[in-house]
Image 1 (cartoon, rainbow, N blue to C red):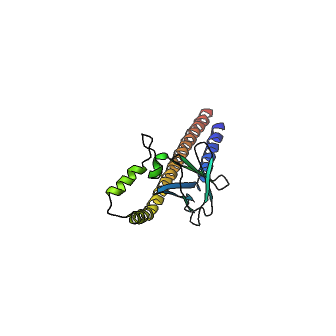
Image 2 (cartoon, rainbow, N blue to C red):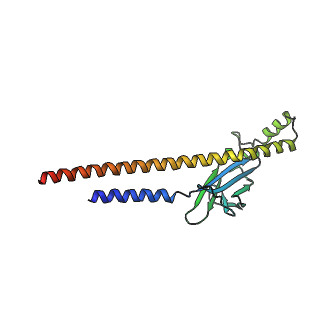
Image 3 (cartoon, helix red, strand yellow):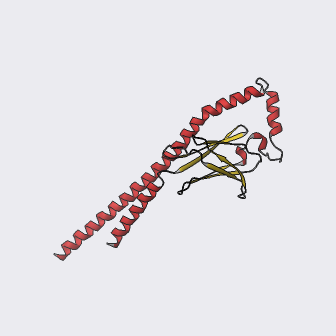
Length: 197
């Protein structure tokens, strides 16, 4: 009987863990030219409006705080070529964190292997490719960011869906193991009942 109780308790804990992660907080960041764009939302599709996002360096020093708009969207301009840690705490255990690595920083802030910034390289590229003015390049980049943003949202939702499928699959295995346990316990009881006769 102790095995049965342990199996039932294990199944209840697994189901509770599933419902606890049903509304997971998702923080996504995307480099966008000289800026970093981000959004905060829940796995059910609700966006976190007016949420505070704190940006830290790797040592935990607070660099800046930004607030999301009504659609859970925020913009940040990095000033140093370091790793940035974005953190949002909406209370009730809803905490999300994302890291912007050095190689994802805007071109002017990245460091190459010789220790020099790639800013001069990017300027050379602009001089060589003079078909578009700087203003036209900015307009093209902004248009691309606008078009890519929905794809990035879909990708984040797809990743979250796969996580949910993995959790549901694990629950199926757990319930299957519980069923096998119940089967063997029932066989044992039937066998013990026949032996008693």
